[in-house]
Length: 135
Image (cartoon, rainbow, N blue to C red; front, side, top):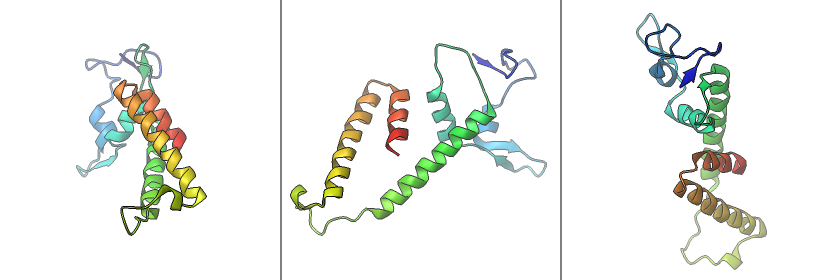
């Protein structure tokens, strides 16, 4: 159940409801265009951070914070992928890597195992936390 800022239950019949489409795609302006949506990834990340056993309310400031985290994470991944340089051959030996590359490779492998295990347990909160901590 979702609650508003006053602690009242949000329902379709009351006037205090939040349209999920407005949160994802943005509100409809007079011109008919949608503006200022957070996107589905932000809403999913926000939902993961919530405890499903307790009542929660939609707080735009909190969604905005999660939106900034998602944007930061996307930017970081974009930068990291831009720095990837594939070896000239697939037979690159781990011993031939520099110390920094070895350390990063070990961290990435450990990270991959931990995130995969969290997803297999359907522990999305843990997976999201690992991703945040890694970045």
